[in-house]
Length: 499
Image (cartoon, rainbow, N blue to C red; front, side):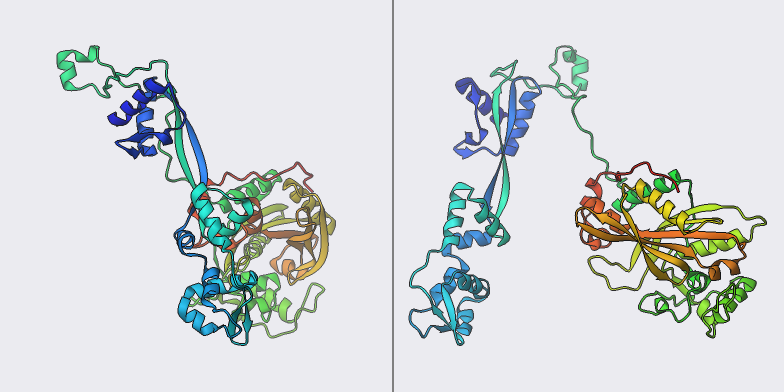
């Protein structure tokens, strides 16, 4: 470091300013700029010099790009392998001569109109060519730049890459000197014995701008950031959170209590994960079980039911819950057991499981957001009002509703919002009023209605953080650097009515 410091000081003394440290040499070799930075920082801390970083980005050739700059492009090699004349050369022979180069260069040679197919042979369309790819790479190697169109094309072909280089402009500081005394960093035992510490020149401590070590933990996943925003919205609207710490449910609470027939396709093994051990649950309320059986098989409460042979064996099967509405059904049953009915506003945000094919927008597990309100005399109009108030809190004001079918809600509505970016209405959730066939067997009074709605957590999270593949948000392809760097979530909330 001392040799670098002396080089900087003597150069400044001679030239007054170093415009670009890239020109500095030591013992005939270019100075390593990273090592130089340490020397500059040491001199700056004593106010001997001041420096300004100079950052430059240039294009450099990859290994493949360097090979092409030296020996020619793949397409030129394919052209050169084709002899003059109408007979040409067979495609198999070119592949034998050039190997992988033939596969990459043949298509480009076709598009450049250098060659054409004549049966199974390749023949020339021109006598001479200009290997523009090679010339472009040679120019970039010599100058570090080219037109945007050329560099974009070569970057796609992975023939060039950007490289950042740093150097420095250096000037004299207020205490510039050629004789830099070595500064002491610690008080030693010898200094204390001799008293030398009284006159020693100590290195200054940086208490103002020095950064501490960044913490290595405590990063919150984007899903949890958005989840917390939704939780706060529900709390602002006066909702209480339901306990959702039961990933395993019986088919009874997941399907039967919701008046979903046992032959419904959702129970098929293609949509539901069934447990092997234990496989069943026999701890179900017997009197309620009988009422659910009757409403399924015989009807009741103004309904004819499904008119099929309801089987307790199906209801006892354990599954990974397919929706958090399984929790809602259990909570409503508990509410019905209370001596006097009380209005409730509940919500839940937690994980559910579907036996689906994994792709860019679907996983075998995802998070469901659900809101539930139970009260006397509430109607579909109340549901629409609540939905407007809820989505206004998210900054979504343009809503439309479309009639839909759900086994456990009637009427049911799909929720659509106008998407300015896409220029069309997109589905953002589902909603409805729970059917009497679901509520009355629980024991809820005749004049009590329940409205509910749900949406996923992953879709708004992907939109918020600009993620287009759900496998980059959850799973082994998750980029931990994305978790570390993404900011806390702030949805574009607005104050809206509360329904």
